[in-house]
Length: 409
Image (cartoon, rainbow, N blue to C red):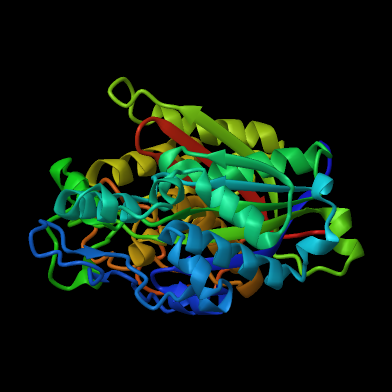
């Protein structure tokens, strides 16, 4: 089976909480981070709500001169990585670069810079376009910023698989540590896609609802009145370590990653095949059976079709046991943070293990006969779960799954 892989550090910047403690408090208390968009005037958009993080300031971790030259997603990534390292009690200066890895997911380019500079170009001409803008807006620049700000010339992997991006980043890191190729990895994702063009495009595609009153009620996974996902932003980074290395340095261990699977999907052919294949491969990878799972961190983006399909898949895999397993969608509180979806779910699961609490799916008010599982509706419950399945479906044909469990040394 190879080396065991554990989570020892958490860094999170989410619409409903910045930092592990505030994120957990919001999840436990069913606090939504969805609000009316404030970073630009959304009045011309059909959907004017999103999971913004207006209170985010990078000053604690990045000097102001550097901040001015960085895309918002890069700011998120650097701050999230430093949070995770501090939480793990690690200093990259003491980690051999050959023993390490940064595996990061991202689903979009830095659209905030691209759109703002395009407007400058149209209004004022080429001379008003900032000289560093194009470089700062490229998807790979976020990795360059991490390397520079951590001063750690380690191995790197940058992944783009839509909502499955951070799940894949964690999964790839897990595989490399398990094989003994590295001992420590920073894994997760960053995304900052709340911009006028992105919001307009999602609305045009019918992927976001025309929902502008009571923003905190907009994301309602599995509920009969769900009408589309709510875009959000943020960053989640976890520190993964080889178990013996973590134990030898006295690290706090949140939980263990035990399996990973991924699959392509042809949606028109069979809209459930991708996620189902990813879950099957995760079980094969882990060596455990579905009978071991007692908690599910659902993908469930509040989409009328996708939530229903995920429910069908869970029933198909777990049979009659499906009705006894708590299924929680934190997107009811965070919205859909694109590439960060999986790492947010991973962090939530790690904290379920440590708190013996499963966080709720809020806004579950009108039961859907086709979504009839135990979704931990509206209030957190004191439940001890030992093995959790995490589902992620990526818009555009990629799906991934992770299996994690309570640590047992």
